[in-house]
Length: 196
Image 1 (cartoon, one colour):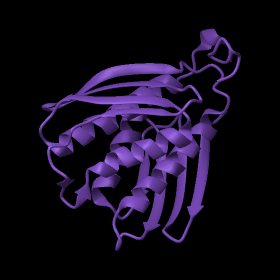
Image 2 (cartoon, one colour; image 1 turned 30 degrees about the vertical axis):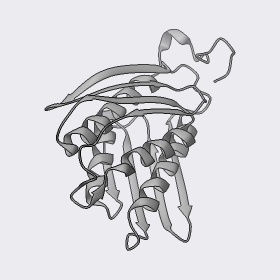
Image 3 (tube, helix red, strand yellow; image 1 turned 60 degrees about the horizontal axis):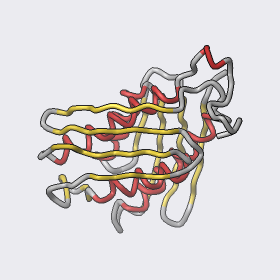
Image 4 (cartoon, helix red, strand yellow; image 1 turned 45 degrees about the horizontal axis):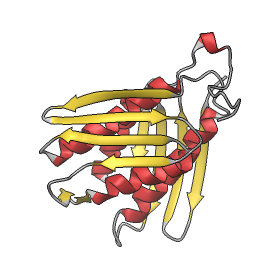
């Protein structure tokens, strides 16, 4: 069984086609028109061993907000669809991940209950032309539509590129761990309720 999903989203602000394969090799083809964001999404997919294809056109003449948020929506919906009912998955994962001087603590529960805990202090508003407040907007859109609980806290960090990079890499790794199938669960739903 291949756990994958495709999402299409077309509005007056964005036109997005996204395909996610959970059990992949980290292959990517990502073109959002936002170089820094392409880099972060590539890190997420490569370290999560997800195959991820994103072709996006957005109203970048306004700013990057609509494109970043709508990609978060599409990725969250694709993730939720690819997981299905969650039978046999680990469900939980956590860890602490360094990127040079930056240190990210992260935990996930694939719970069908969306919640984002986000404690990151970016020392500056932008890195290059990328508005760093859009990092939270992306994760909020992703979490809301994936219906997962995700806590991200940067314990230390100075370089904004490194701070963001540690978060995206860490997210990929813990989502990979949480979505792995445990043969001992014999395809059981990982919840005492019998449903996520």
